[in-house]
Length: 427
Ligand code: FES
Ligand SMILES: [Fe+2]
Image (cartoon, rainbow, N blue to C red):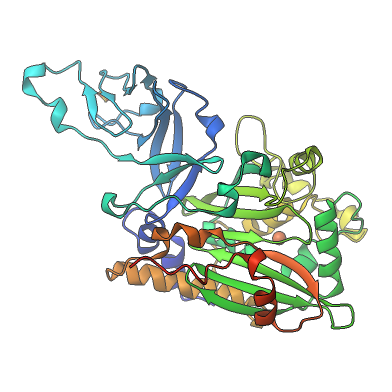
């Protein structure tokens, strides 16, 4: 269980909240580039960390992420005209550049110089690793962009998708670091429609529903090893990564690997930014086709948006006959199963009435760490991770070996895991 005040601290990320401040120390994925397809394209509304924003790409291709509301009389700039290096409010014509400077004020005489006195909220934005990112924190704390392994690869090595989760970010994220649910929630009677990587993982999950969990805290979050099986067949070790504040890297016995970021839209909604990637070879057409249409890591979304096709409004296509036939849920697709369960807890789970056991050790550790960092920041202690971009570059692995000791396995596979042991924080 979690005390209600800690649950509040963990889940609330609006302006001025301690967890919101922690999130505002990191670059966050915000948009897919197709939302801003080219110079002078249509502006889009964007809600992040409880703030209403508008994003646009100016005539020179620069990205602006501004307060949605015009500083004159608070009309929405979503209705604005994106023209000649700025976004013009259609109410009285004030125009703003990507840095939030008011560059034209046609309804006031120029001699008042009122224009020079008005600035609006504008956040730095960057295109990186297949997403458009935003930094919403203090200007003097702006870190470099995070060097996730997938962000450093050529685009052919990755496949990406953004979707909407109707729940608090941490609720979704808890599923990422909860390996034991895979045996139950993701049990399929027939695995022929799964990708080879997922089918192999499914076999391991079904062989042993009670893996032991071994957590190792790191400067970037933690990794844990879940150990399944017995020495005779080899132990299946899944080493999963948590990178602050809400990024996971989930391994599979075969590529691609999946990486996710859970980003708060507000306290009761999140965007999930999913990247599947193969660090060793470009993704094949078959990989892409499966990721687009298959039962795996990301949901299919309705045209023109980020709403999953299988969602609460259609009962997640729950089929009781399929459930009776041996599928755990009767819901099609791994991601739909995850989302149905996470959203079923309500927008913010009541953690005062939960009953955690030893199998929830990773979730307990992540909560403690995040709460500690948010409290530290509120006391003036800044997080170090954002300023060490190489730390984000770790990888998750899923391997089967006779070796029964996590630390020995980690040492043996240190090249593959890309652990940043030799990369100290800058002073
Ligand atoms: S409200 Fe935007 S210019 Fe007046
Ligand atoms: Fe899951």
